[in-house]
Length: 181
Image (cartoon, rainbow, N blue to C red; front, side):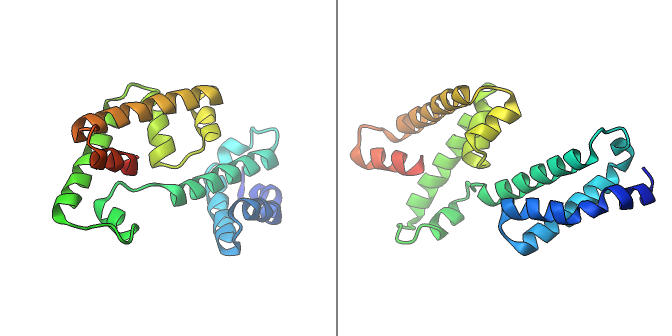
């Protein structure tokens, strides 16, 4: 696709792509940025676009995926001890408590890393990256109900490992494990 064809077929979709982005993002500045980012992506893919039957449908799909990626970036969860204490006012910040939480976070990371696929991907995508069950099902090509089952089993495994580490029978540790998860 030449620059002239791109200007004739893709650039006129500017308003349509903006409206679509605004429905997802709900912010004018973010929507304008998304349109610019998508135009750059489409420009870089212009040679592949000439063989498409509907450039408009493809452009909308690229915008949708881009908006979902932006939303997911905002929903990510950090396993950072400093952030844990910063975002939870009133928690005790004693060094031993900080060390205990840091060890628990390492155990959660290791437990997730030791899981077999697709359990590892489902737990990571849902609990660390903030994807919805539907998005995970679509990305991994599995049923939504299967995602829920896999996620439940993965979380139970993490809970069991933490409970074993902290001596679940102790009421304080029981509350700590529930707080982490």
